[in-house]
Amino acid sequence: MSYYLSVGEAHRRITEYLNRFSDAVQSQDGRSLKSLLSVSSPHLVSLADALLIFQDWGRLIKNSQQLNDVLQHHLRALHSFRTGRFIDAYNAYERSANAFLLEFRNWESAWAMEAVYAIAYEIRVLAERADRELASLGKTPEKLKGAGSFLMKVFSALTGKGPKRVGALYVTCQLFKVYFKLGTVHLCRSVIRSIETARFFDFEEFPKRDQVTYMYYTGRLEVYNENFLVADQKLTYALKNCNPRSEANIRMILKYLIPVKLSVGILPATSLLQQYNLVEYINVVQALKSGDLRLLRHALQEHEDRFLRSGVYLVLEKLELQVYQRLLKKIYIIQKTKDPSKAHQIKLEVLVKALKWLEKDMDVDEVECIVAILIYKNLIKGYFAHKSKVVVLSKHDPFPKLSGKPVNS
Image (cartoon, rainbow, N blue to C red):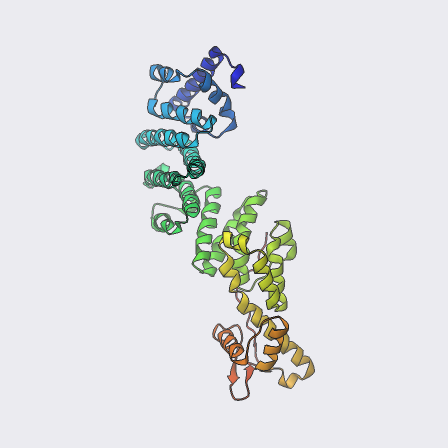
């Protein structure tokens, strides 16, 4: 399209953009300014085409505009983005963003907060593209790390006691996305402390969208730390407050909430897994229901790459103890139907045979060790009669239920 654009039309488009930018700043119209500070937005394609034709746009800025450094570097970023030079686009955009942040710090009100949101989002996404370009050239990806440093500067500009603090959670969430992408999740801790311990932050004053995103990422952190009860609370909060029409976001939350729920003994309905295309969990759930160690092992092996990418593989692998508990319970139920008076006495050799049928070869000593762990973890109540190689189950509630709440979409 740009090949058919006249110089005069290109000049007009650039001038119109500059005038709109000036008007937005003078009238403190944050929403309009937000759209003008994007580089990836489709509605700026016509402006980018104009920059390819009329290349003396720097003169127009110098003659007529406020925030000259912001505009000079922003239009350079837009030009580079349009031509697919993402490294150059990022470098120019970072300079523009830094220049804007200097101006923003001097404004007492929070009128430009929407523009700050746009910059925080754009610099992260642009850094990811720039890093892919660097990698393709055989160079070390470094721009996303730079974006993280810039976002920390934005965060510090928002953490005072004034009206700007309402934007701190959005920027925090962008930082989380950077740190998770880089694999430096430990850097989240200092930001979390600032949000959760500062007296001038009231979590409920932040936009609901940002609350949900924050709880999603902090919930994921708790999953990594194996703090499942706190992870359950945070991810459940995110699920309950997520826009019900945003199925993609609900699926992202459930991808982590479901393993957490499984770890505390709550099994989701198959219909829920099918509705949100989380079918990789179906056989995991079935293995827990039936005490089928072989099925759990196959399910983990089949979807190993997906579970590893999500960071939940180790969580799911530890469900093996629950499968042992369920298997022992099935043996208990079978014995109860045959001889109720001796149902609570289970020979370890019976468990060895059941495991062998499930393609798990273990001797009596190994099985005794597993049962000891089950007793220690309070998954079963009982004790060993070592001489007779029998586990004697409690006659009252031998299989305690794990505490938890069911997953509801």
